[in-house]
Amino acid sequence: MDKETAKVLSGLLEEAIGNLGQALYVAMKGYQGEEYENFRSRSAEVVTDISAFLLDPIYKQFPDLEPELHRDKANLWCHVEREE
Picture 1 (cartoon, rainbow, N blue to C red):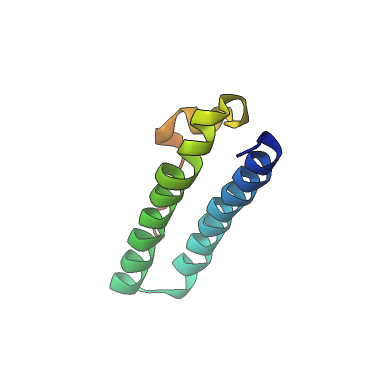
Picture 2 (cartoon, rainbow, N blue to C red):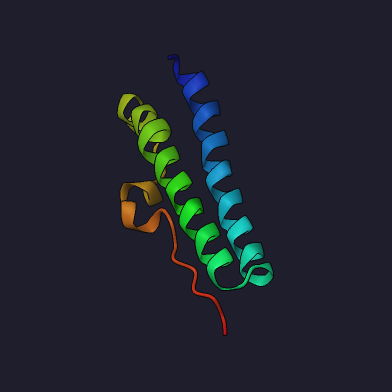
């Protein structure tokens, strides 16, 4: 893959992760109990898969494209607690 394609792809994938974070926030207001927990759990799995299987290979080939935030994998996906 050339660097320009990698740059576009990584940007789109990072945006997808951000959109899932926004969806989680919306789901927190709309889902209750088990429905919310299922949504949160599946969203986390999707983010993990995007990162591990799609972004990490790009960043391995083009390390300068990896955002500093991604270098600390613990910061990739924030844990959102439901307000009771």
